[in-house]
Image 1: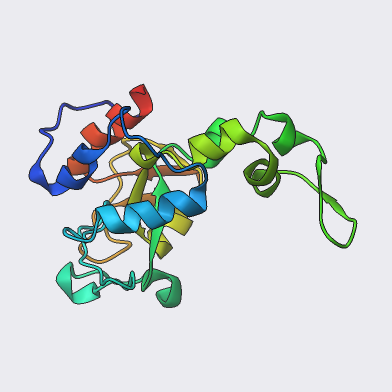
Image 2: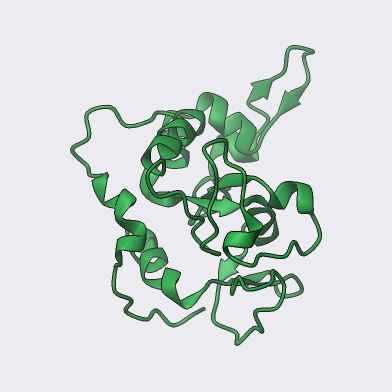
Length: 189
């Protein structure tokens, strides 16, 4: 696992400082959280891992950060709301993830994240926790998947100037130095 380095909390992440445990109406689901997150980042629309600008309609400006899609340009063009602590980490051992507790309209049963998002109120709150959500380039979000963060001296050449590195073989992700303090604080919660 990567060594946590103390990183100064810069103005780069000031939008997240408005969040506190005293907010009266926290989102009760991931879909609600994404709407609130979009409002939070209206005044400072920058992706977390690559520092790319994005538009109001969540389209990434590759030129703002010299981002080069690795494989999936269509997904890379959009912002997705990344869980720093993956949903798998806080959900995979829950009954709704493990057992067929949900039923589709056609009568077929299902489990996993989609079931937990439907029936488990505690999971919904964790999935919608705004302190765990950051705007990320869709391709980077997809590539990271639920990989653990690590410091493995990866060469940051997968995404142009973006210094995020994905090690698909070992299922590890190396975040940029400037994000590591924030990531550590999210994991400490």
